[in-house]
Length: 280
Length: 289
Image (cartoon, rainbow over all chains, first blue to last red; front, top):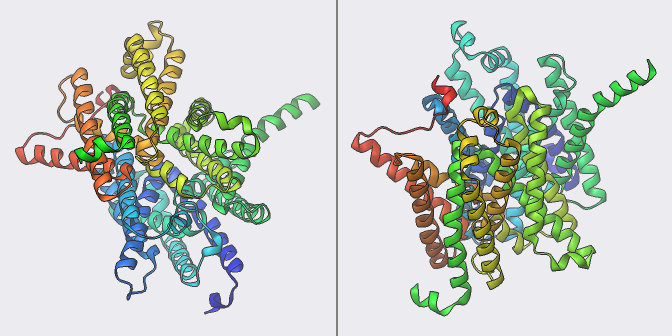
């Protein structure tokens, strides 16, 4: 496959570009559902999966296995669990996310201590490292991105209806259970694919910050999607560029760029407003 | 274990600090859970990491900062972040809950940039993230003791105000309680407790120690006072046994403490279910109406 012929820098950039499109796209949907926080907890559950994967790979050296897949498995289970808790314990909602979050990190701390992998390998997963994107990682990212886009393409209308008005969706015959399940898959996919690029602790930023900035300019849901993807891509590309030139962890730089974009979009309207007042 | 405890001074320090934290964190956690602020605790703890990373970066360039304990820097960052959070909640007034992921993630992002500027991706960082018992010094014990006294004193002085604010913010405001002041006080106290707990439990796990024992206590307490008692008991149990397990099996103490409190929650909750007792869930007044 062609990804084998890419150099490690090119692999990293391709991975970052893909993630820059997909993460804000799903982020916009999460935002409408008012469950942006869910991504934060889920990303921590993914960490447990990855640490379990690394540990397993150490125990069973004969089976070559990418920890990303196990991470995805855990993220999926976690997101189904949150969805379940969300539905059964309506009043429990506030505690469900922090509890899953703490369970995730607590377990991964234990697993990490047991495993003999060096700190650097963990830091790659925690804070992202573009240069360590392997061909198999890139394949994982491309496959998951493809699945996300497919789901989006085929179920766009249903997903939007469920996000905006769950009751209305039920009445109009959309299977809310099926859609919520699909949603859990989407979130789990996005988190596990972004992990290698921005890192588990920073996935939440790439999911929520571009959407927050777009909120200030978008006038419709479609515009929100488009703006989020554009801003996400700008943040990712500029972040990668600066991280390369100043040798800073790319995950951190991408997030800082999205924060700057957010600040710009928050301050811009009031500045323009002031100018208009001055001229009139 | 007891032999080791008598033999190694650092272990004595660690257990002293752990005991104080197991007491303080769940106590403030009660207010946090009642006010539904559990994610704010998380945000503050991540901001503490930003502060520590910033301190690490500054010490490499200005020797002045060497004298300063990194904790103070972490604490001031989390207080600034808390103020910023309130501001953002006003900006996104129709999507209040969105302010939390925004502040949280920008905090970590900045922290990572500081860390990589300071070349800080090493063993020390791991201890800050997941806690450690080895590095606890006598000075730390005194700092933690000092902060405990301050927080306890403030809590006793302003107990009425904070309690009132927790249950009915509007009523509190109407009856003339300086709600902004009490709110700030409460946030500062939380930031203080988070930064001292960080030593042993680790930044990523501090909020769990504040929330999990309280979630367990919710199942048993019959009054607000009892909730404190239960939360502190569960917190202490988790901390002491967690530290013991961490020491015996060479695991990061934050991990064992949180896993233990989670187990406590699951076992007690399923015990209640088996006995046919109802599983209690905290509801705020508004939802009941």
